Length: 145
Image (tube, rainbow, N blue to C red; front, side, top):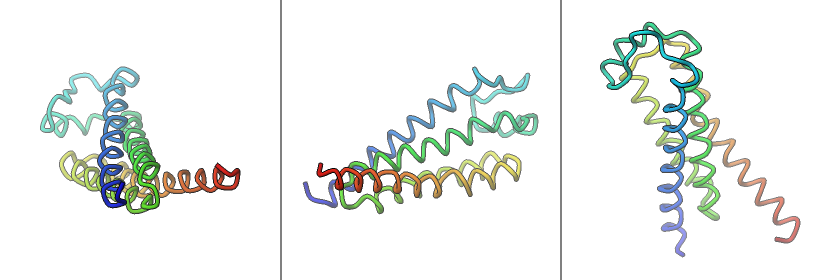
């Protein structure tokens, strides 16, 4: 398969898988850490209105979802991109970062959360995914596979 097509398809698949991981974690969050009484997160406006009643514990799962979604999506893209692993993973990471910036702008959570989210959950997870896939390839090459 031509490398550009392979990289493009790996980006699409990586973004889809990462988004799925993100959504599953966010969907599971209220059953593990219940939202504050009277909170309605069924729409963006209602979430924005009730975000001030959230405690720090309510931000654990969104941070986890963003970090693990980005890590998984970037790893999948890097794994299937072949020699184009770095550009594929970085594009997926930047797509997730753009989504994170958009959500932080729209929801306007606490400053500590916004900084932590944008600084730790996207590009560092992308680089970690690249390192994991690259080192895995090196180990397999040394073993002769």
